[in-house]
Length: 321
Image 1: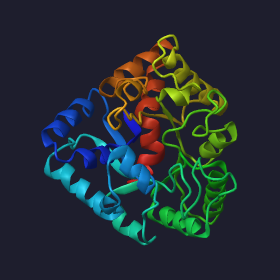
Image 2: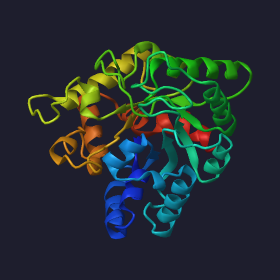
Image 3: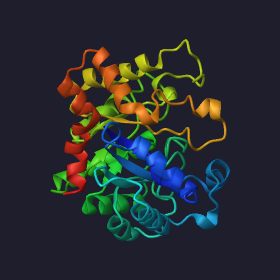
Image 4: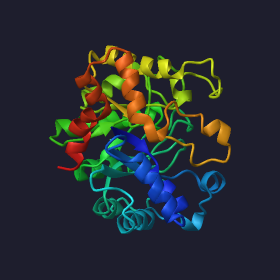
């Protein structure tokens, strides 16, 4: 299974003093029977949120140094087998000091990025920003830089104005002979679950039209509009599969569907809530998701496409070419 979105790099940054623990964790989750590839992200919120939610101080926030340190840590401690087909991502470029720093980040393995997280920054607006906040002039320059470097542009977290500004610019660049790579790493269908982080039908179709994929994410509150994630009377797996079915029917096939975990249960201090926030156990997600798709009459080749080859063919092969 290829996991389109998991903030593993942030987790390593938080837990870097616990080498044995991290090694056991990675061996348990990333192996040939479970997650065999993924986009592993550093994510950056506001300074206050970084401190309050994950215990990282302002002085510790440096995009280039953080990525460099984690890359070295992974390699030195052999955290990930060479058989794991992963790339690095950054979720929220608030702290990018200079657009040309993308060149350095690329050399460190960056192949995917979200311009914004939920907030507004110098590049555009996230889902909590004013609805009129779109892609800024600096954001336009950044998009052109990402397209030039063949770095995938992740549209999850962008508000609708920023989303469409990026789409329109990428269409223009494509007409000019460029090769923009866009996708939504961890978003579901807004028609099924009307929360800001999900996508409208028009947004899903726009991603498809630019050759991208939608990573349907197994977070309960993105599958059904509820904060009661501990409610055992709700069939969350059914709602997750409903999202896959809906996108399949909207697009007329499964070629642009992928999957993501974005499991946050390791980060926060409210264990009952966050340990129940995801539908599937992170260490057993492939088998559980495979069985769910089998039970919903998906064929073997369709399951393989959804779990791995769609993303590998449409995004991964393009950013690593």
